[in-house]
Length: 313
Image (spheres, rainbow, N blue to C red):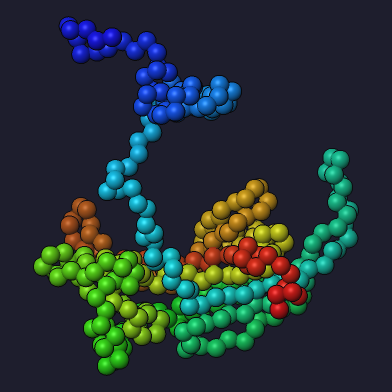
């Protein structure tokens, strides 16, 4: 009820006020006073209130018509990693006797061998499979990973300059849209970010496609090497993850629970590079050495190929 002396009105029934705005069929609705979300039954509202009542009041706001379309923009995540490592462990069930409360352990998975193979799509180096048989296989595996990562950095220390050939020039001149986002190129006078630039593979120097300047800055070859195991989550990761964490470099993981991980990363320091920083006191540029890190990303191929290796091969 509105008064002629004030701009405020009294809402006697929240149900009637919100029903006219959200319900066009005339059915009774039950609304949450915290988030104003409607439900067709009272028991559904009670279940919702158990979670919603612990938070501050909110309101659902829908996007406008010109901003109601979501598009994929992380095109840099679509780049294929040129170097991959495939690995596998073999272990035995060694007898043991250990009692902790009501739990009695009588067997333990002990790694006895592992194999590692580096696959490269950019050439410039060939590797043979690394096979190890013996004790302390998990520690040797971590050491071999560090050696391979440093070897890759030595082969590709800096981006290779682009090889601009007649075929690349002809391909570049025929493109009028950005290969990444599909938007037409704009003159440099109108928008510098959407001008036409050349994109090439930093490992080989080969020309790839024409991109916007903004999209080209995102499509950088990451210093990342995937390490692929079959059934990493259920078995192999438990064998070497502790030794991996005890070496220099951070470890990040996406856990599924306390024992299983969806994926985890290990950062390996492969060298140093010169950089210049401005001294805040003197205002002069000072030369400093910054570490160069490579990211080893451990993935489980069982997530993509849910079957045994015998059937897959």
